Length: 104
Image (cartoon, rainbow, N blue to C red; front, side, top):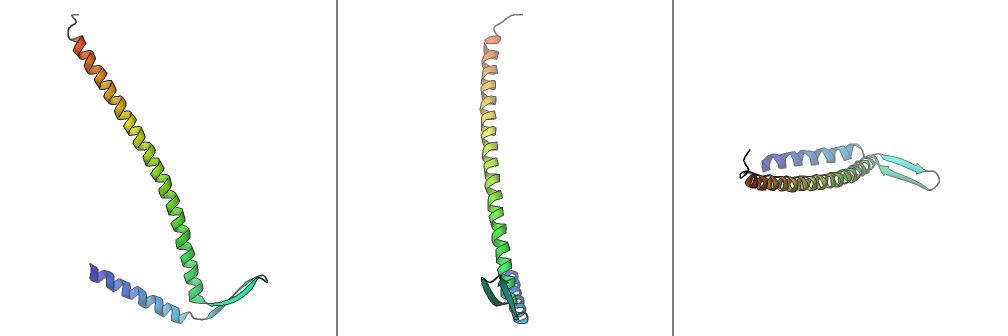
């Protein structure tokens, strides 16, 4: 399995390097008169990719926090219901013990 991982990693690295070499053309970036910059196209794509990864990570973190809170609430509900069930079983057991002496 480690060999397959290594082969895939090498292929991805080769792809990234060849992509970078083929897209080295400068792209001008202007924002009104605040700044005017030229960056290679591959760098611009890489930055856009990283921003997407960061944004997705933040959304994933928020979703995990929400799910953790929901799980905690559901576990509390389960504990409360189990406690209530044990209490009801204890009550029924004690009633059965005292009810066996009765004659109908």
